[in-house]
Image 1 (cartoon, rainbow, N blue to C red):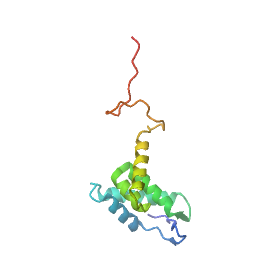
Image 2 (cartoon, rainbow, N blue to C red):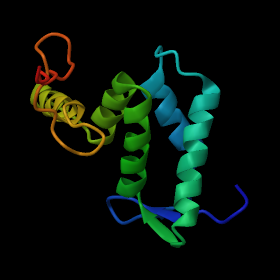
Image 3 (cartoon, one colour):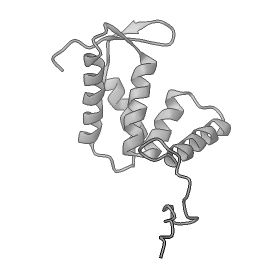
Amino acid sequence: MDEQLPAVVKRDGAKQPFDRRKLLRGLEAACRKRGIKNDQLESIVQQVEQWCTTRGDREILASEVGERVMEILHELDEVAYVRFVSVYRSFETIAEFERLLHEMEKRQRVNIEGQRTLFESAGNGKKNKRSEPR
């Protein structure tokens, strides 16, 4: 990346340079045995680098970088997303996984326009059609 990446501010306030290799290692761990190609992981790293650079800030919170990675992973592969989130948020109990899965289920029930899907048929996930007047 040609442009200067911002410094990453960790939870404890320590600052360090953006480390693409560290991000790539985290993605590789989350995506292990998921059939996700290395070029896809490189693409994610590039997207995050570009996002960091275009913000125009000299510093960026590590939590913001993590949230951005989670957004991208959620779209790519839900299992990799859960793996990444569990490490990133330091899950220690089953209850934390259950809450995450519940959030994911709720997200799936929301359509693109942000409206809850109200009339799903049990079993097939499709909306029921209104009967048309005869």
